[in-house]
Image (tube, rainbow, N blue to C red; front, side):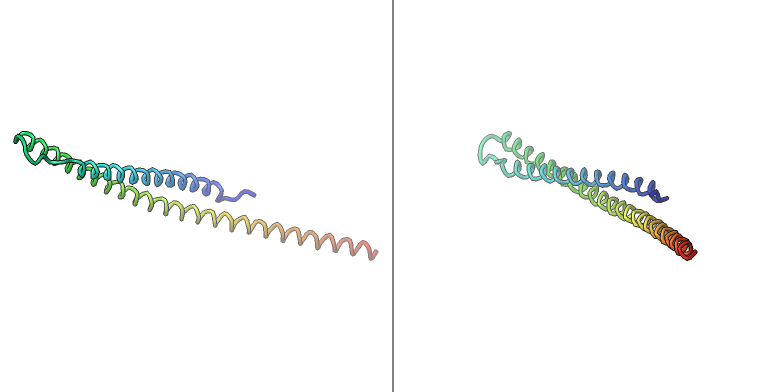
Length: 139
């Protein structure tokens, strides 16, 4: 049985699938950003400053440490943006799911109403047939 909500349910299902795909992409981006940040911290901890030697080497080591700190800061910003994107994607998915469930429920209610109407019509026809058979047997 076709209901008037069937095209809407299909459209909402497509929107839900798209929102789910965006959420999965956002989750992947958060995971990758976290991994890059952890890698940057590991690289920072592996750097050693020279304890003695020419001043040029000390300045070079200091510049490398500063560059690594800038890299860590950039990674932190990337993680923050990825988490914000993940949050918005999660919210969009939640809203899409609610819309889909709403129209799916309306479609089910309409189909159940159609089924009840068909059952009522069948019962009415069976009563009419039974009455006709009864009258025929009396004659």
